[in-house]
Length: 151
Image (cartoon, rainbow, N blue to C red; front, side, top):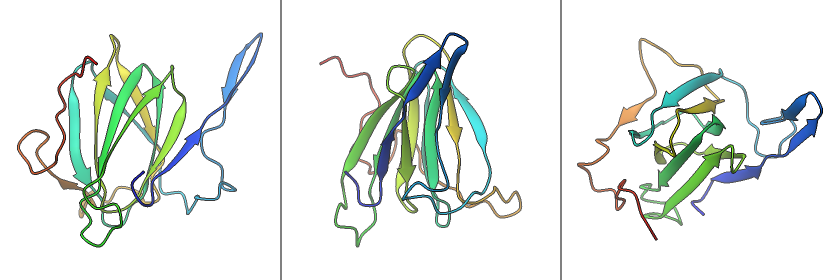
């Protein structure tokens, strides 16, 4: 696991009305602070990435469909420099993934339906000076291939 990444297994609490699922609590051991909440959508087969943040820590949770989230540790002084983590999250695997600063991350819609991802970052988006640094999803030095892997 990349240094600083945390995975929290989420639990659905069902009853005859539906279910409840807690995602992030301020008493979670890794909780820092709240910046904002937003949902992003990804179509099946579409890649959104790569990018990283210098100030913001992300907390990803897929709410609908299935999404592949991939992290790459390009931090020179990290004990896990060069490591890649791949997470399949969504209705079949309800997890929350904490993504530290300076860790490249991206996502791909997998399956047959629109994927919805909730992010609860530690910072709000500053339109005039975004803390978002992009890397081309396919033309880069990241040792990862977004193509489907039929194993």
